[in-house]
Amino acid sequence: MKKTFELTHPKIKLARRVDAVKHEIKKYLRRERNKTLPTGADFWDFDCKFGNTEAEAQPVHVSQLNKLIDQTQLENRTSFYVEILAKEGFRQARTDAEDAFDDEE
Image (tube, rainbow, N blue to C red):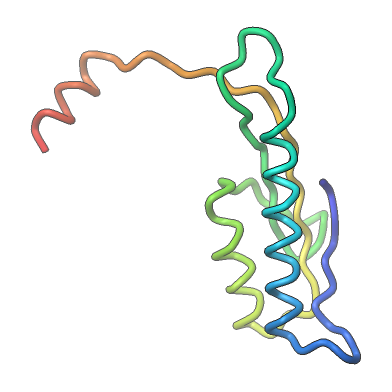
């Protein structure tokens, strides 16, 4: 998904438009996650970018998208760009250093 979302609409209020955009993104992620995984892949991972325009888009984690959308609403921006590309993800084995760190907590 590579899309510039417009938040202005003559009949729809800003808060409802923001909710609709969040729902569209969530629906896209759900649809991609339900696709059949390639052989050897453990899960679907996503490369995401977010910005005011396509040229200004910066890489972000998928979990940050809703917070960034809320931030655009607070800044009264009229549009923003979101890019979400699905890729196969592979689980990595935990190292001994990570296990020791978890034991200390």
